[in-house]
Image (cartoon, rainbow, N blue to C red; front, top):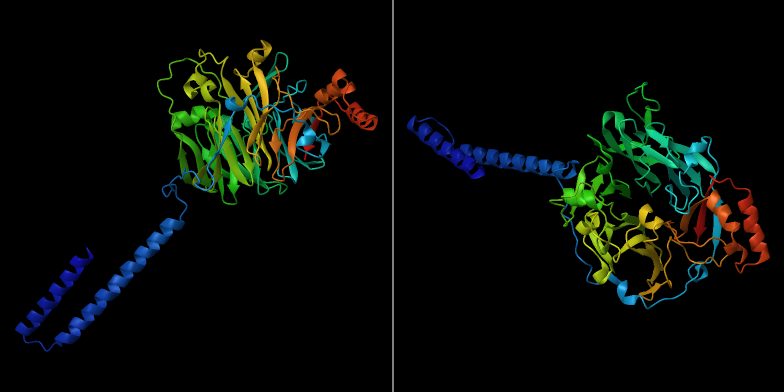
Length: 498
């Protein structure tokens, strides 16, 4: 196009020159040619400037059309470590808590003004539905009735959000939530803390929409939305909206994690990933897609009317990097924002593993199969809990599932299995103070391991024969008994081990 313009101008010069000569006009031909060349040069410079400006705006404008290509390559200098579960079964070692840590403390969460915020339906059993998250400076309690923030001493700081609608109780210890009446934070989707920001999903059932929210804790910053007085509690959502999604359904949102000051990530569960083809998506704070990571396992021609729930997705931060282990996949990845997914471990169950389609198939027998149950990581160890058979209330009731604990020593590059198995998940023997056995549920950026325990379970243990027979000094025994005596069954205690 540019060459054509130049040719037209040159043709125009010759035409003018010929015409002027033919009409014997007194025009300076050299000056005219020089002027036209200058004009063409100016035009080219203007076109170049406009093109560069357009290119710059395209690069800086937050648009979903400009995306980075995913990188899934292995680091040749540090290939992923292979953790051979089945090949190391004979490598057992009776590890105690003192082999891994030097201190333990108990933080009772102060009862908030609204006591329902700490209520857990299953306060009478060891594994609660509620969860805690911490960045080492604060503790976030996520329960059925919302989000509550405490300092590291357990003192109540603020109610981030309370779920008021769409929760119904029925039967013994049973409740339902969600649907068109639910306006709040779905507590089955874990929140995350990154750089002092709380990331969570919000379900607006009445409108059929969902939102991803980012809230700077302690700022009391509120985002006002349209009032609908006929819906109790429908007024404000704390924080900033990172993404709006129409036609909301619960399975549209999986885990949400902050990955930097200006970006966040969404990790899809296996069913959603297999249907959409997207394992992980990174976004900027305006909701534009930065990079989309492919799930290469596709769910097609699924012929069963219902499916078995997938093993829980394992995601956590380590050294500030989001780390994920997808269901029915051997590989543990770290996300190096925003476009690199680095393989760091391979957890190998050998011939006892099974495919993701077999996992979803409710008619497929898993009784002789092994699968990951929980995963936590510190600077020194990977805490690996796995099961034989699928873990659910039905298999537990029938004593048909077995739990195994193993620890991978990162410095020695060795896997140690705790001897034997149990019918319920159990922790390491607590020889630090003779208290409850411990197995981490969460690890802070500072390496502190955490577990949430109810007052009921706490008291039950210290009234048990197991505790009475524990080899612990009388001073420590009385201290724990005194602590337990002042607890109510529904109190919440965070056990912190370091």
